[in-house]
Amino acid sequence: MKKQNSPQVRQEIITRRVMEQGWVSVDDLVDTLGVSRMTVHRDLDELEDAGVLRKVRNGASVQPSSLFESDYRYRVTQLSAEKRAICEKAASLIEPGTSIMMDDSTTVLPLADFFNEIESLTVITHFLPVIQQLANQRNIRLITLGGEYLPRFETFTGILCQQAIASLRADACFLSAAACVAGEVYHPETELIHMKCSMMRQCTRKYLLLDHSKFGRIALHRLAGISEFDCVITDSKIDPGHLKMLEEHARKVEVAG
Image 1 (cartoon, rainbow, N blue to C red):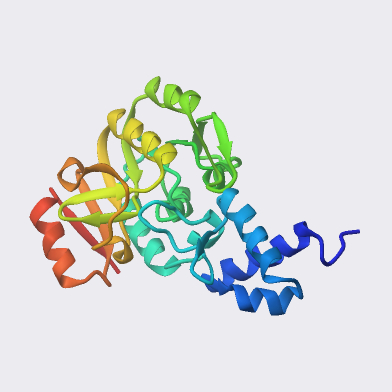
Image 2 (spheres, rainbow, N blue to C red):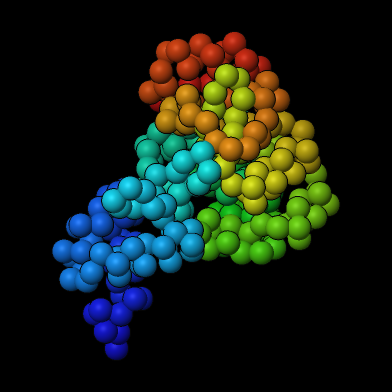
């Protein structure tokens, strides 16, 4: 049985609090856990090294920065209604009998909910939540992309995954990114951006799914110009200025909701 003051238990509590609240202070953690500030900082250091959270002044956050993408467990809870609306619109663009690639983004994840309405669909992905959801769906031919598993993102990546993508060709890919500004999209994680770029090279049509929170932000690595996508799909809460920018650069824009 775990001791209440063991590092494992403390870090589970910290992780749960940060995922629920988005940010937590060191003082709150000291009071909650009944340990010293030094112990809290040590736990936060270990959780940051594991990629679970990001240390900030006097606390910790799961909010992404230009250098950091937040943990899957947090991202999947954010803007779920907007992401679902975007994916419903995206699903309406998929023809029966086609093949598609899906990246590891939580914005694209709800797309799988609409596949039971599309006949003879081939889905290619490295994203574990999609793989688990579609594994027993009879109308889906599922092709999984293996490689090194990254628990923080619940996805497979690395050279083996890139080689698998390069050996395939699909009708369309559905991708997202962390940031969009001045007609270009960016992502903070090197491991993940390589997978997105590989998918874009192997697909005839390219769809970019971005909820309204992604606009006006910046991240470390450039993924592509908006004009490289056949269609950009966003939600109805997008700022009018950002929508105008999108319409100036994109080949086609769809607003969901």
